[in-house]
Length: 202
Ligand SMILES: [Zn+2]
Image (cartoon, rainbow, N blue to C red; front, top):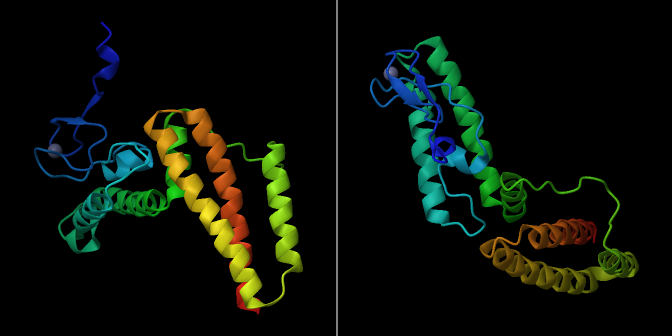
């Protein structure tokens, strides 16, 4: 009976009492807004959990869901449905923001696969630690916009290179390697932000 786990749990629509899938936003029979269950960001938008995404498709799914959940459609809805709509709408907004951002998308994709990014502030990877310290030192000593821009460009180049590597590791389901690269990317992003901050202060 190995297929049992693959079958989605069924429930009844609160409005028409027909059988529904727990994960659905709307009842297929009476169109009532359903409570839905806590979903990961990929399920929330209805996209396959993957690192490489079709941006157009994600955008279309987002806008079509937001259109259906929009307050303009609240007329004639029960307070319960309005509450569900608002909850779904907030979840859909959040999922869209997360999925559009490569680092947040990667973090959520790892979570879907049971891997959590270590949240403690200390860097375990000695090479990474050295790299970060060197760039920070350069940035601290830098003078003028041109110098800061040069540092930022180099960091950005690194960032893009590791982003490509991250995509490859995810494509090969190498989640442990992906986790390591993502940690590096999170630090590179922080340094980039510091560069931009310093540029603004120039
Ligand atoms: Zn129904």
